[in-house]
Each structure stands twice: as C-alpha cells, then as structure tokens.
Image (cartoon, rainbow, N blue to C red; front, side, top):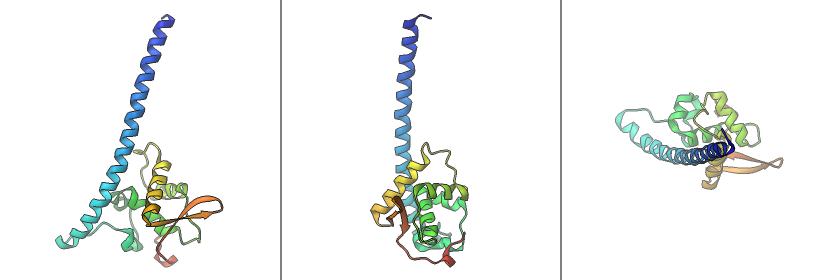
Length: 161
C-alpha cells in the first residue's frame, strides 16, 4: 500500500466514525425521549390499573416503595422513576444529598443494568437536573459538590434498605 491508499483508508474510517458518533448521539436522545414517554405511560397505567384489578407500578410520590421494591419494578417505571426512587429513599436519611455518582452506584447495587447506556453518569445527571427543574427534587450545595435531596420528608423507618 502506498501513502495515498492509507490516506483514502483513513478518510473512510474517519467518515464512518463520524456517522457512528452521530447515530449514537441520536440513539441517546431517543432514549431520553423514550424515558419521558414511559414516565407518562406509567402515570396513565397507574391511573387505570385499579379499575381493571391490576397492581399499579410503584410511584415514588405515592411512597409505595416503603414496602420494598425490586429492580424489575424500577425498570418498568423507567430511569426517571428509578432515579427519583433512589433520591427519595436515601438522600434525606443521612442528612446529606446524593450526587449523580451516588445515584448511579446505588442503582447498580440494586441491579440496574447500565449496559444500554453509553454514558450512565451523564444520563443520571440529566435526569437529576430535569427532576430538580420540575421541583420534584432539590439541588443543594454539599461541600461544594452538586447534590440532590428529596422534596418530601421521610424518616429512616420509611426506607427499605
């Protein structure tokens, strides 16, 4: 191979890499949109479920998690519900907020599968920011680190773990 062949190959690889990066960014944006739609559908599901004799998906605002929750139930609720659950269940029990890293690690310890997320920490941070903007949780300064706490008062007796 001469230098022109390497240059052509390099240009092809560079172009393909850019296409893959754009596709990945599009898929990540689509995942965020899907999570928002799943959250909306979860609310609809929970409104209708009792009418047809089905059990609602645990909703952190209703504190159904106080009796314990399994990871499959959290997955059914979507990433936003899972993040909110962790904040509501743990952030106020130690008198400190939780960082995005704390939330990601707590979900991992509960069995959350981060494989489908290219950047799990960025995903958690985006969800936390969105929840804080909506007033569902509150951002606090915790030793110079961005942390989040629940807007709902809970006690240690309410937390299942």
